Image (cartoon, rainbow, N blue to C red; front, side):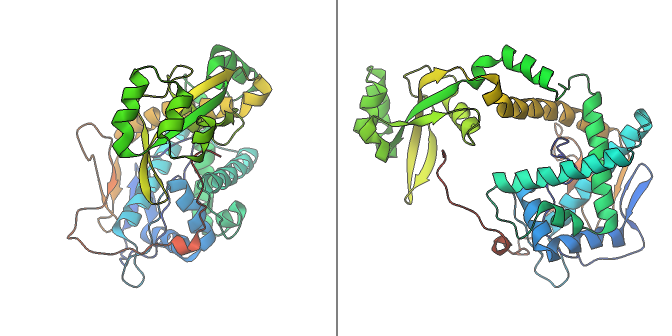
Length: 364
């Protein structure tokens, strides 16, 4: 599904031409259409422009390359882009008819800046070193594609602002939310234990007997921090690892390892990672503001996603069969474009040569 806060181009996948043309529309949404030629040009631009593909792959958290044949795209790539086109048009149509909103030049300029910022943030979060800037990626889009994404960004932003459940992204609102959830933004000091799978039962038994975090880490952990009783460091809301640390600690009490470990790879072997909060201190709002903003954006995104699902369920959609089929995958899912099941074949290549990823530890 489209994610309105990661707006309009959330999951563009690298692809080339699908290898099919006709006079019909690629997609139609309540009378609005995207022609086959436009749709194919968009797929071609993505596959032929490493900068554009890199940023969009970062947004999608997926790398899907061209199909095996000349001038083709994988079926999943074509279906994904068709789905995103439909979602964007549906939201734009809904906003224009329900709220009679038409973005002016200032709104479009702001949407362009916002879209470039999202592309940059996605690449940074995915640790991709893209060959160019997000502005260059946007500039590489065909004119109609670029204009549609910027307009869609503006329409989606407006829709989010009109939802009753949306928390305004103002300094006053951020302060109010922070005060109501202040404990969520404590600076957290943690200890870890990296335990071999064969030692997990013994580790849990020793913990049940009341053995301390430091003693458990020294006895069972394979991490270098074991010499320090597992002490790993302190993480403030401004840390890039804060969200991961906060999630890993969960509801564990101070001085207690989380009972449910994660399994991670280290030096080619698998280990159970246990995390324990050892100290929490209140963080001033000014130091926590970025984390508060991220949390509010996530909450707004959840509300927007629900609204979007309702919009899609009430929208008349048509899809050229060459690019996928429109329907619900199950009785509990919303309708979307999907690639029909085909006999097993290798029809995609890895485009990771265009990307540079960094191997880092979970916490940094």
